[in-house]
Every structure is written in C-alpha cells, then in structure tokens.
Image 1 (cartoon, helix red, strand yellow):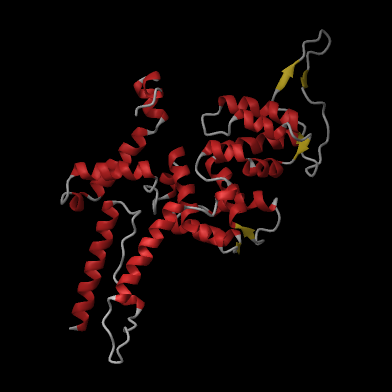
Image 2: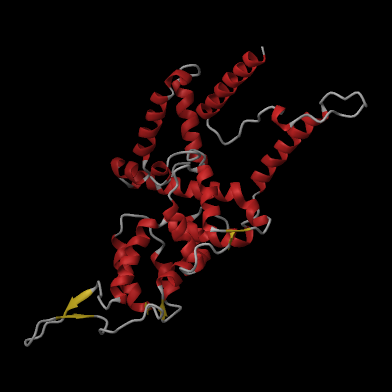
Length: 333
C-alpha cells in the first residue's frame, strides 16, 4: 500500500528524501561491474534482486564504508545486521574490548573505521581506558547512537565545548544606551569538565540544531525529556542517556528493546534449517568397515550458500568455488 507521504511531496523532493538516486546509481554501477555474470539471467532479474535486498536490508553486507553510511536506511540496516549476526556474543555473556568489537564490525564492512568504534566505546566507558571490557548490549546501543547520529553528535560536541568554555552559541544582543555589548543568556562562569554544563541551556542550544540540521537527529521531544531530568550533565553522560533511552531506540527502529535483544525468531529458524541440513548430510554419509558412519573431515563438507547474499554475490562465490575445484583436480592428476 502506498503511503500518503509519497503524494504530499513533489517528485524530486520525495526521491531525494528517500535517497532513490543513491540506490539507482549503485545498482547501475554493480550492473556494469558484473555485466558478464548478469547477462546470463537478465537485467530485469538483477534489478529485482537488488531492490529486494535494499528492502530487506541485506544490501550493505561486505560493502565499503562509504556506501554503508550513505543513507539512514543503510545505517539502520547495518545496525540490524550486526545485531543479528553477533547476538550470540550477548547470549553467551561474553565481554569484549573495543578492538574485539571492531574486528566483528570489519567482518561485515572490511574498511569500517576504528575511530567510530572508539567513540562508541567512550560512551560506555565514559572516556576511561579503551582496553576495558564491555557487554554486547552496552556496546550495541552506544554504537547505534554514535553510528546513526554521527554528524549530529559532532555538532553537539562543538556546542558542548563552547558552553564549557563559557562561550554561548546562542548569544543575544541586549540593547543599552551605554554599552550595546553582547551578553550571553548564561552568566560567564568557569565550568569544570567534571561538572558538565547546565542542562536547560544545553537544550536551548540543541533546539536550534535539531530544527536546522540536515542530518539525522533524535526526536526533539525525546532530547528535551532526557535533558529535563537533570540540572547538569557531561557530554558523555548525555550520550549515555540517549543510548539508554527506550523511546529514541524505538524511534530509530533498527534494534529491538533491550529485553528482547537476544531474541530473533526468524534468524533462529534459519539456523535450525542449516543445522538440519548439516545433520542430514552427516546421517547420509557412507558407513565405515565397522558399520558406523564414517567421520569425514569438515573441509570436505559441501559449502552452503548464505541466504543473505544477493544473486550476483552468490554467482561470484560459486564461480570461485568451481575454479578452486578444477585447480585441485589438476593438482591431484
């Protein structure tokens, strides 16, 4: 069913808001790059599979970071994929360092920058030692805020530093006959970094940013709710409050609530299917001379294609597998 928003905006504005041209350009680029393989099953099928993968959120797998962060949908898809792939870390109760989590991120995006991982870790560790251990849920929700709202947080950091130094970004001119000097809404005060800044003044500055920013931002009402609950706060205290806020997590829509973080029935069903396939293969193996099933080396088990890979990725893997098999056969001969 078509949304009413589609008809309430002019065509070019709607296409820009949904980043349709970004996906069209990427699809054409992949089409040209893989034209020999795609010619075997048709261009129409390629575009169908490409945009199905965009809709399902699997199009960001193993892509370069510039593409992964290109659109809000890509960022949300990457967050959801990271959660689904590595939630067993949380299930097992494992605690990992920032470097460990960065290695996991690079399994999905090989050139994922370490800087973003470190920034997410600082939210959890409050700028403490970066080699400390973190739970999966703590890192994931902090990473969500840092990754999805990265441009917004850069502006927030600049505003926070100005306030900490006594420079109010929202300076007003107080007209007087004697001086006509600029006065800040906040009296000049020497704030300690440990004390943070006044929450109400901080929100006044952020309110303008939230209204004018062209990047993704948390809902202003929820930011106000976070800041209205305290009198003063630090920068990392603010980020941690955003990361823990259930309303902001639901508004973003990439991850489930913390209580459901370790649950993923669709993925569990896929895993059960794969386990059943592997079990069936082991049952059908030939018996040894003793009458018991022979234990074959794991390297001889047939490769099972990942259900997340789009068609052109699968064909690449299959082609590489065929080549490697031919090389093995020729070496044995």
